[in-house]
Length: 334
Image (cartoon, rainbow, N blue to C red; front, side, top):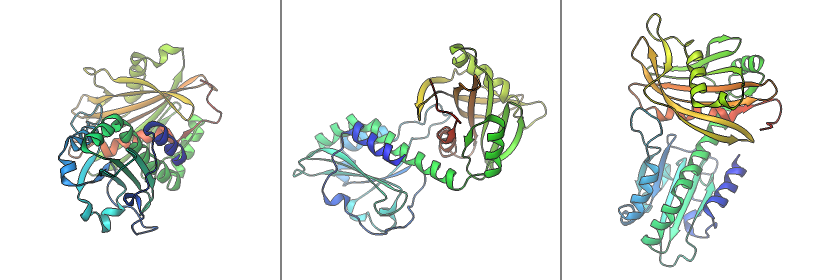
């Protein structure tokens, strides 16, 4: 995965690995990285941070998390002056350095991994002027976000593979015929022939997913209407807090819908909001559906978060990464 990420960085950002002191190895070989998921330290001088370059970077990093029912930025951003970037800060998991220097010959963006700790990504954007740096960030902002997201996703995948729930993974394999890595902490809540529900419960939040299959009847089975109907059918098996209440899809909001390819397999992603029929609960959800050509069944991973008091981003993002931990017994033929 990391090799793929590096290749993507080079292709998307036209990276030239920059031979300057900004990438020298500081200290702390073999130490564990610091910081929370989706937190980025930006290392730059104050005049850079307060310039149009800083505004451009903040625009991309602080975009709202999509289809959330409250504003949360994609990343929590902390600015640190270069002279203060030391000790624990230099071992942060996500670091982005901005360098403006008239002697810079190659305007560009470079990336290194595990520079002073593990796991870690350190990126450097350099240019000879503020204007050139602003242009560089404006042209590559979305790619910067994608590279950071890939690094966070790799960490989730690595954790899931190293600290998986063997019992739950076995049930999933027996029921759906797929291998799936599930991080420890998720507990099986309910299972039927074509449905499985598991969740990770916190004192003030719930992080859950459910898997289900149903017959594939052609492209119409993957439309927003069909996917929503299937979701509501199986979500009704997840009970709400009061008698007779159950999960459903918020009818007033049509989910976002897009096709994506992951490891050669086509998936349909659907993002929206869920609520509870017969009670007052709700939150964001994201589902991923694909066609298992071996069985001619639609296979769906449906992920949801309930967190009325805390932010939802750091609960939802690891759930989104579960789709990258699914392995079908035969290669996709889409």
